[in-house]
Amino acid sequence: MPENDTAVTAEAVGDGKLRVKLKRPVEGPNGEIAELVFREPTGADIQRHGNPVNLDLINGDPKISYEAKAMTAMLSALANVPPFVIGRITASDWNTCALAISGFFLPDMRS
Image (cartoon, rainbow, N blue to C red; front, side, top):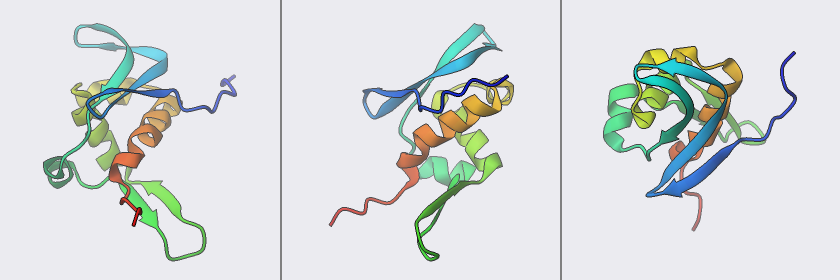
């Protein structure tokens, strides 16, 4: 039975990086991975992997959705892990990571 904990467990760790602790660690190329640390993306990352976040401001309340392939590639690149590591994390952890880095791809709406 899935846990009912919906809180995003991401924390800032300096230099614009975010750490996400995985609910279920996965095996990586050098052993077990229990957390992922994501760096801030650059324009080159978006050129290479695509923009993984869609923001709809037209129809009522703002809605955010993800391009799954672009998000998976971006999670891999920003955490500096091979794509197979992202493929091994649970769906819940994938969504937690995606939500955690979404802010990197939203426009700055401050005036």
